[in-house]
Length: 148
Image (tube, rainbow, N blue to C red; front, side, top):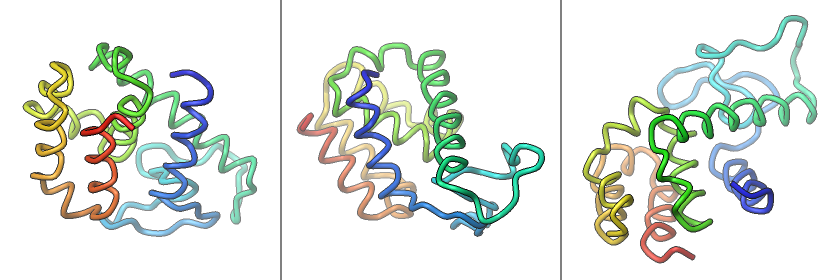
């Protein structure tokens, strides 16, 4: 992902996930901090205390995004063939769902890969995920559909 597109993704994730400097329980009751950082999956580095600083939040997000890109490259290497907007959509999905759950969207991912973006958007919206995240799903599906 090019740097300008990654910067846009970061802005979108900050909006979608929110930014929190102290831990909270997400909708699945998972302890979370920063920009949607799952503390169960990845505890804070030793010595960090709350509230987190902006630099610490940014460090967690950078690490989480490196994992997202690594997972995408491993599991869905064709994602880099998508245009910038659709790359952000699939990265946002990977960030939110994780690899195991995203890979469960078999028909939706096949539609993305084949350039059937209306079908991919419909698949995104016809999921339990869409009912859980509401406006985020609507926005990402529209981005997938139109590529803008």
